[in-house]
Amino acid sequence: MSEFRRGVRLGIDVGKARVGVSRCDPDGMLAVPVETVPRTEESFTRIGELAREYEPIEFVVGLPVNLQGTDTASTVDAREFAADLQGLTDIPVRLIDERLSTVTAHAALRSSGRSQRKSRSIVDQVAAVVLLQHAIDTEKSTGAPAGFVVPTDEEPV
Image (cartoon, rainbow, N blue to C red; front, top):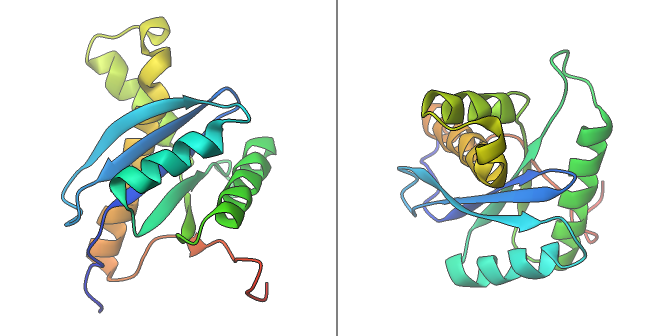
């Protein structure tokens, strides 16, 4: 079993209107919220700024497959977002199964006393925390990174 790869990671929860961003410390102890980025033509610019600030070893993008493990419109959107992000950076982009992260995020916010309406602005960040923490925990328990790396244009598919 290989050791946990030390370094900051940025978690990305892709939504139609917003993109939640989280990060972890270099030792992967804890994922924390960073911000909610509006889903516009400026999304990648802001994510690039965050990458320069936090210097991650990789991006972890949630892949929202359905409960049967098959693709949905959101899955296709997340794959395209991850591929576009990979085309703009030399930082590896890793896709991981996150089929319950948004549900878990809503449940956590509800249990903390926040209404769904009041939580709208941060639920994407919390979902990004959930998916990044899952990726960190998976790598620590198995010795292998969760999910798979999005191929770059130079790599064969």
